[in-house]
Image (cartoon, rainbow, N blue to C red; front, side, top):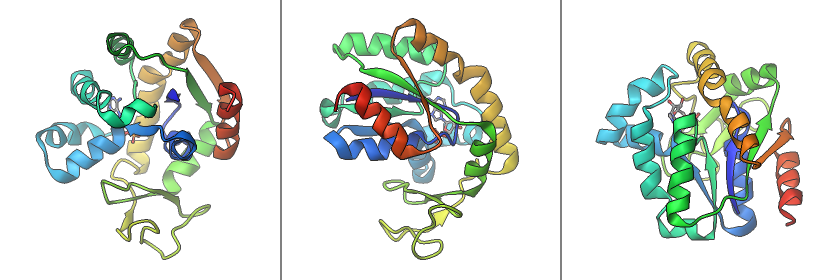
Length: 215
Ligand code: AMP
């Protein structure tokens, strides 16, 4: 399947993407995961992206588009992909449209994960993430803690609170979402590609997507 997952930070895009990869071998492409990996590895990209990420701002479009142009052409994308956190601005959505047309790839749909702001705030402050850039498994101190406190079940690396999940950065990320990313809902509606789902449970989102795709 070839999907765009839209939704505010904390709406569950990453969790839903990970569940969907188990269905048909489609890969999750999370620009946030790629950027966090680059920051930890101390690459040029990571150095450029870090300050924007830490304060909850978007990384400039040209950096993101450079990453995505390469990523979409890697062989593992042939079985399908789940775009998690990209596009995030109208110029990124326009660029993606051109990129996919050039690669002769057709998307199935853009799924908007609708979650009340109170749920989002609670989820983001209690979310914990595996610090291993290759794993980045997601936990929640209240609803899904790792079996051993602070240790990833999957790879044994430390599980941490992301630098951009302080209350100040979260509030900034939600403002940025409303201003720059929420307009994508209208963009994909106009394209006739939008599916809106009530996203308080990730399993319910996956079921709705499967039904829409006839899987
Ligand atoms: P995420 O893990 O998707 O919440 O992304 C974490 C941070 O990475 C965001 O707050 C942005 O600073 C940056 N980021 C991730 N994806 C994008 C994107 N498509 N465009 C711009 N910045 C991004």
